[in-house]
Length: 442
Image (tube, rainbow, N blue to C red; front, side, top):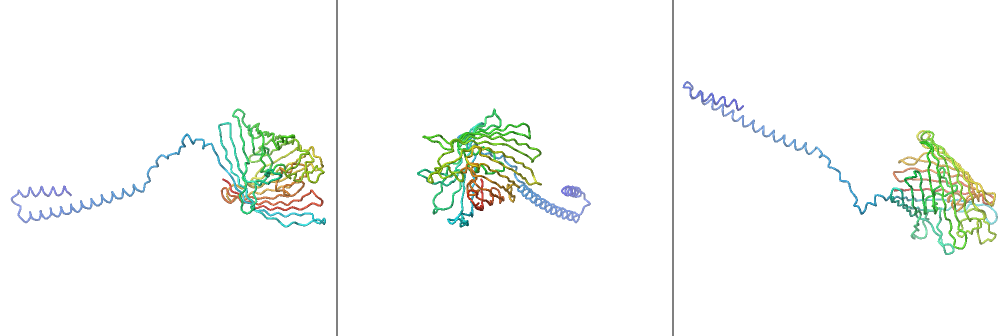
């Protein structure tokens, strides 16, 4: 456009010098140039407006584009707090409602049901684990538990961490449940040596409680060793010595045990394991029962005001377990048989068979467990076997049915039903127990 104006201007200059050009023609040319200038100004204004709009559009586009992420700043603990990285804190809480029905023999010899008992109970546990170095760990756990004063001494049940909600809102006891070291030398792969108040080192098929209640935490020294033969087969050894009662004026009561089992993985997830255990109690026979924990074991005292153990206890256990999957659901069957080889009575044997189906892990998943047992009165120490089966006694038989449902992450609901018979007296007495649990973990 500007070039056109220059051309026209040049022509006017040329024509202006020519004598043949008249005044009217010059006026027309001037009007034409003026119009061209006005059009040029309008075009320039529109161009400026378009450039301004383009800049605004570019700014909006830049705002929509996210900035490139900056390098994340990783929080670093100061050297004085580096030890916190080696500390692990965990715990669990269980709220339980249970209903108990049982038969009892009346004074006239008849058998009648007692009034059913309902109670709510809680169990809380807090665990602290510390990795001291590559070979040494330390563990500490506090837990609730019921205590009684008996003959001036405090007795806390070794196989129950439950606290019954009672006694007018009074405070509840909190006890030292675990305190131990765990030594696992780098030069001996698969070996763990534990000492103190420790978790039970002995394996139980299907987590059954024929011999040991799951809440028991023995005190002493134990060792666990796994010897792999290949990728699918391993031999396991567990053993230890434990102090039950330290006496200043008589022999101490102790427990020594050893266990070995072999586990063969056939095809993942199929496996089979089998093994044997032997436990030797020292100085139990004739020992006075200070705390009333014979719990079905035969009383060897002729004095009605005194209770003593009539039997010694050297217990042999044989056990086996098979695990597989039914479709996508894990399943297992298991069994355990025990014999007190030195029982003073004929009630020296116990056995249990059971199975599991499913695994309550992901929200909405479920698991089921069932077992049947027959436990004679002097087959095991009553003070350490299942605290719920026939009220924590030996001398009974019956079913246990349980289920767990994973409500959400770290929250689980469960129910257990005991349908048992107490065989300590004639006739046998029925025993029923229903437990409903809400369990939380962190």
